[in-house]
Amino acid sequence: MPAAKRPAKPPTENSTARALLNFIDASPSPWHAVAASQTQLQAAGYKLLHERETWKLKLGGRYMVVRDDAALIAFVVGKTTADAGFRVIGAHTDSPGLRVKTKGASASNGYLRLATEIYGGPILATFTDRDLLLGGRVIVRDKNATDGIRTVLVRLDEALVRLPNLAIHMNRAVNEDGLKVHKHTGLNLLLATIDDKQDAPNAWLALLSKAAGVAAADVLGFDLCAVDAQPGAFFGQHQEFIAVRALDNLASCHAATLAMADAAPAAHTAMIALFDHEEVGSQSRTGAAGTFMQEVMARIVASSSPATDAMARAVAASWHLSADMAHAFHPAHTECYDPLHALVVNAGVAIKINASQRYATNASGEAFVVELARKAKVNLQKYVHRADLACGSTIGPINAARLGLRTVDIGTPMWAMHSCRESAGALDQENYVRLMQRFFV
Ligand SMILES: [Zn+2]
Image (cartoon, rainbow, N blue to C red; front, side, top):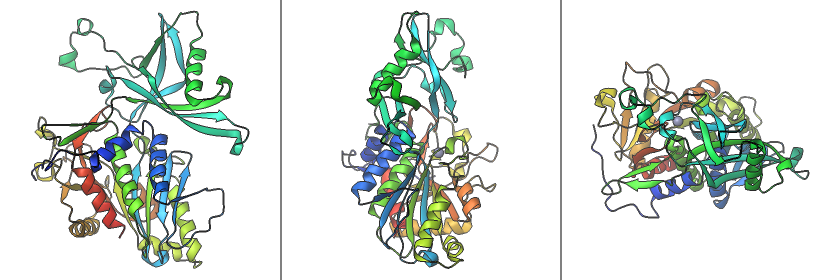
């Protein structure tokens, strides 16, 4: 196993790790993450395109397109895309957790609570006894907007919610049996005290409409996540670690956004694709199994090359880095890792390999990234899951199979994947960005 490194000096406000924490703090929901990425790319000169309009793309031009607030594709148009193909970094904007139900507000025993539904595979126990922040989007009536509706991003910074634990005196076996949270009755967020005669749905709607800055009657729908309210932080004697929610996979979205902001015109088209719904299988209009990336690629190729085989040639010449987080070796659970293929934080970016194609990497993809890392002067590690444990998957195999892209799964090591608050090394984000920047050259 490689040795973990520590920072030469504690990370500063200008460090890439600090920028990552800021990006995640600004992104309590996938829709906020897309907006945060969009803001950074706009500052780097990327022009927003709309799918319903005709695109007039210029060679070397910088563009981005957002679908349903939840997925973002940005690209620099290559000079010869049909021959040089695409260099794509794929990642996902969503993270496992709790989503407020549409009619979730109810009053009982003097409390207003919000019922939630589980999204993806969170470690439920980690959501208890934490300050939880509600963040997401409200869809409001607006007669001047397209289709008469408009999205407002909201975060309820003051009205935090909570899932208090039962005292140990009523759950004596908690330390022997583990903390079990009932998926239906145990996930009602405590929001307020309320008189049982008060109208709970209206009280909730008043709070939500105020956050959205509209009249209650104009709130038509919402998507809201309950997430860790505590800002990201460094920890460890030398500030060598970071702790923050949603490292999986906002760390990859952040790194891809920074690399995209730096991308210069080249023969190939440089592209990032940030998808929603990876944590629930990617089968959606904004997920990797949808048509979004394929359609954007086709429009780019068609803008410069009318040949009927242009798209197939471009795809054959392309590379796709499927960027998603990896499991760091946990010193208290050594039995869960293959020691030959265990990852150490602060020791480099990982190539993720799985013979059953849960990760899309094969030997030629591995070789491609080894050479890329050598040129970028970035340390690499290689990860293979224990053979007797079920391996997770990524958008890599989906994009490889559906689009025919040569794909490599990469990521940086982290602990506590799908916890309410995850952790990782403070040095890895810098290397992640450098590798992605080199990929676009
Ligand atoms: Zn992930």
